[in-house]
Image (tube, rainbow, N blue to C red; front, top):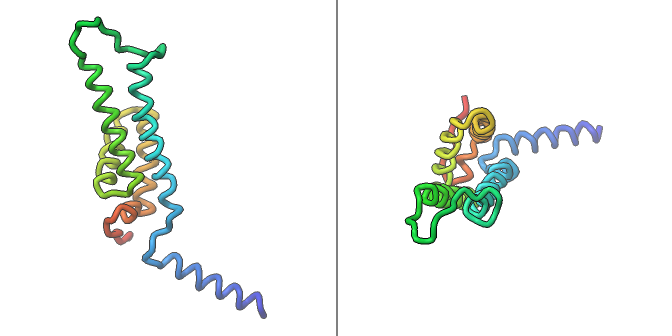
Length: 140
């Protein structure tokens, strides 16, 4: 008799959780990790391409003007850093930048396409937009 009552309570609690308007914080964890990785890449990119590493593609003469490559690496790193911080802070602009980042990443076939496709699908399935202050959409 007690197990039947416990099962009903668990079903009721589960139904409350599934129908609750409060978002589940564990669903945001993979997106937050993605934000931390993007910030790490933003910090690592300039060091790898401009620093004293074997991957340094930017070698210039002492009196020469900075090249387009330098500006490209620095602007890409800045975009990565701002996007990653927006994700970590759960700002609306961070969500918009992150979606734009993922749509551009779709063009990086094959690995970028796979990562972007899985992330965009996850975001849609779990309505990640509500964690950034947007209203949750009704799923049909």
